Length: 179
Image (cartoon, one colour):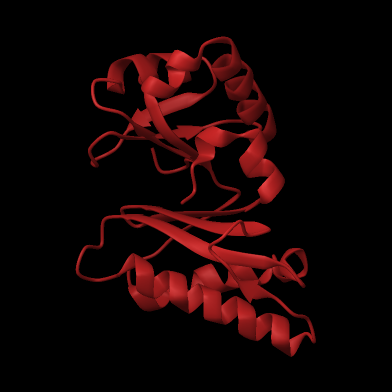
């Protein structure tokens, strides 16, 4: 599936039950990466709320699913340079949301081993956002301790998804597990 908007990490022995459970919420597909599923859902907030209710009713679900990450923006890339250009364009849309707040970028990369390093791309985007905030006359701080927001980057092969999550989102949806 190329048109995904959710990446799911499943736990050992949780692949089939997680796949079957998630099929009730949208189109689910396997990937070439171990214990990684992708989904296409119509409405991310509805998806998150339904999953939150399910987890409240049956906490065992978290023994199947390690991490769920919806993304709001996606793009394809073939090189680190192309990735940085497109990721910067998307991140620039979130400048006002990050103004005078603490944040950091968290990347989960699957694929492009040896061609891209997650920590280098995280630093690149952190620096890009800080510079953009400064150019706009706004402040912002990189923080890994209880930040106000986290910019998430998920790659599955040559496809990237990005989203931004607030501290409140992380409390409401603990299965996001960003860090």
